[in-house]
Image (cartoon, rainbow, N blue to C red; front, side, top):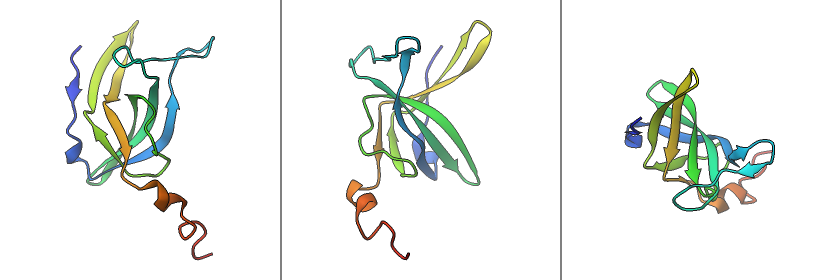
Length: 119
């Protein structure tokens, strides 16, 4: 089936709802899924996509670990696509991105002033 591009500029915000985790290719052996084109480990990130008064959380696959992406951080997503799938009577939509990167600087989330301020 064809991949459908998603215009991320239409979202009012995109936030990391589930931190990046490597995807498994084989649960029994613990073998990690690897991207065919790049050879990098495929990671899955739960993203909260917000538009107007609605929000949805979708799992997005990306080749390579998204550096600095943490729970609750606003992120930018490059080349997001949705691919419908069907297998043995099951069906769904798989989301994949070329890149997911943090919009927050790592220093701001770990600075002493940011931790425990006002307590």
